[in-house]
Image 1 (cartoon, rainbow, N blue to C red):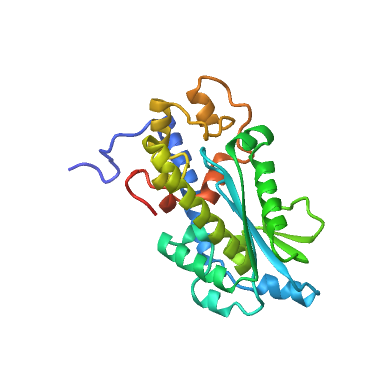
Image 2: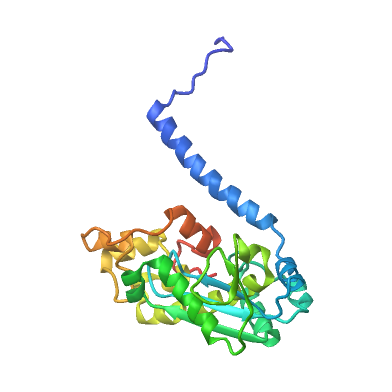
Length: 275
């Protein structure tokens, strides 16, 4: 009978164990972030605090598509009325944590109740020229400038823009502020619909499913067919396909950008599956 101290399981090498631990840390970090975001309460508390200090016309601002390899980055600006209990009760939250049908229903409700809504996009060519961070800020600025009503305060998800209006940069704003969450929903519904339309123009890339993000299917299609005119050539995965170094890398760590902009259930590997 073998000794109770004897373990018949083959020992893994330190290199293998180290690689496994690294992968586990990455997965654990992403899982922990998803769990943390789901625990945050999206409410009008930030808006109430600003109104206490005198703000009267608050615009929530957010962008989508920052981490995608294809297409524009899209931003929305939304001015909601003070009474937004119906949106809160309806389940308004960060668009990435909502199913497609819930986002589209909420988009219609937001547009019905909002005092002003505006959407703007910055194309891939401009992204390549000025970098994705600046392109995101530009899209946000353009959306604010298109509002039919001038806001007196901007609530922005994790950024500031070149606008004279008073601004509050709120980290994880789309999970904390109903105004920012509303902008997140409007921007995502708009961009997702655009990606489905462009999928008909470029059917080999599976855009309707992954919305231009760097899924394994998208990367494989890039390798097989090369980039389209709407791919972001300054992004490393696209530049690599063309056999050249990227003119620039993503402004943030890949995990941060892709994770923030597209959770795992939002970019399926199966191109026939759509969220």
